[in-house]
Amino acid sequence: MEDGHLLDHVLASQVPVHSLFGGVVPELASREHYRFASALFDELMARTGKRIGEIDLVSVSRGPGLLGSLLVGVAFAKGLALGVGIPLLGINHLHAHLLAAGLDRELSFPCLGLLVSGGHTNIYRVASPSSFKPLGRTLDDAAGEVFDKIASFLGIPYPGGKLLDELASYGHADRDLLPRPYLLNDNLDFSFSGLKTAAVQYIEKAFPADAWPRPLRRVDDAPQELKDFCASFNLAVVETISAKIQRAFERYPCIDSLILAGGVAANSLLREKMAALMEARGGSLFMPRADLCTDNAAMVAYAGCLLGTEGAYHPLDMETVPRGKKMPDDMLFRMNPSWATA
Ligand code: KG4
Ligand code: ZN
Image 1 (cartoon, rainbow, N blue to C red):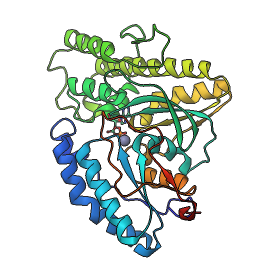
Image 2: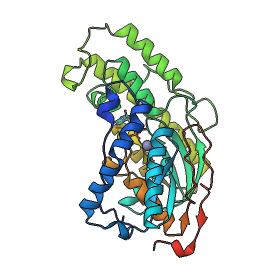
Image 3: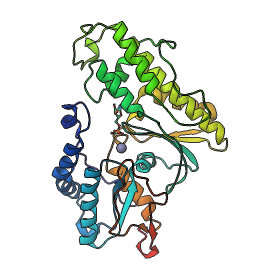
Image 4: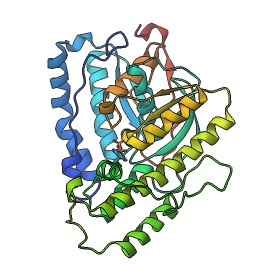
């Protein structure tokens, strides 16, 4: 980042490694982080033509996430901060996903934030880049997890959400085929287990095991009944999410913008529905550009940039916050105005 603009970013995807096992293997994830961290840093320095002494802040994902992977990233960032003598800033990875939308277009606050990924389905009220109030979350599976599990049940290799979405675009949805789970309440939480069970029961009843080639990797190999099922499933997930977002806006009538982020933000129907919802409200929809919806370092750098301009930093004994451990609300920032990066 330079003057609030992204100079460049590099990424080493672990999807090919984990897809062999049908999901993320934590031990492999941390080993891959360790294997690639220095090389990616060197590559970025070479591509931007920057010298190490020109870096004035290092921001790093502090959590939530897998402990081993977080430790590798945080140790690397601490070494860099200590070696160069610059401030370190630990970023909430989930907040960074949402803030990434601001890289291309200035965000307006307050707004609502919907983070839909393989690990999370969260709704926030976002008052500023450093103020996120959680309003709702999933009580069981995350939206991406449900897509991936049902995809896997259909013989689509991990992570199957993308192909399931593509298949859906060629199908006709039956609105009554599957339930819209966990809506008969007055909260903003999600629970997808009922939908998952209903989908599995339908698949077992309706489709013989040899109805299409498994693993299924191409739309062309799928029969129309499968495309129709995917369309119904996609619609059920998206309408469930959409219902809770509408409810969130009813709670906060003064808010008229929404950030949609996380891997599932790539879902074509979800994007369409959220765009229609915001248009009907006369508000704005912010989304990170496609390559910054999935995990990336640019969003963490950008979040660091937004907070660093105010002089926020963490001491070098900052700890990681793995998944399941409560994230401190204030992230324990300290402020040192003389370290402000702008
Ligand atoms: O944020 P992300 O890249 O990483 C993790 O949370 O790990 O999200 C990945 C998730 C996966 O579950 C993937 O299947 C899902 O996003 N995903 C999609 C689509 N593209 C990616 N789900 C539904 N429709 C899509 N088009
Ligand atoms: Zn993520």
